[in-house]
Image (tube, rainbow, N blue to C red):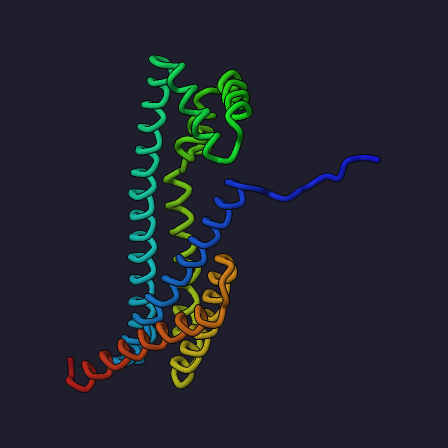
Length: 236
């Protein structure tokens, strides 16, 4: 009989994929809420389609660029920290290999291996790739899979843009009498979906996440619409 095969992803690969998916969902959610709040606020002050489109596009571009820049800076800092930690580990492996072998043995022993098995595993891992072994066990880093700031920046940019397009199109495409209704309904439906998705990716119950997401979006649109209406009434 042949051994059963497994196609599942395990460990770090699955965790990294879930983190990317969660970041994409949250980025889209940010795009929905911020752009919806902006265009609904402007709609409270005017029903001019050009003004609504201009405000929506400005908010989309500003938000997506801000998200991309922030993610690039954040992930670049993380990557620099990872490279610095790997450099220290590489130097220690070169200068005191026996001490590093003992350290790796102790770390493996803490994970539940017996002293003898931990020592044998540490020796074999060190002979195969000492830096990768220490980076994985001691630092939780894969030297071959360092975080990429450009990937993170583009992912944030695209996720925010995708989310922002929904309220923008919902506001400028329908007839004037239907704009606000279509926007509010579509935005709340989208927020329910992103709330459910983020909860499921985190293995949590979706009920509270959906409620929080929808309530937050409704509050944002209500506040900005009230502000726009007050400015319109004041003749600003």
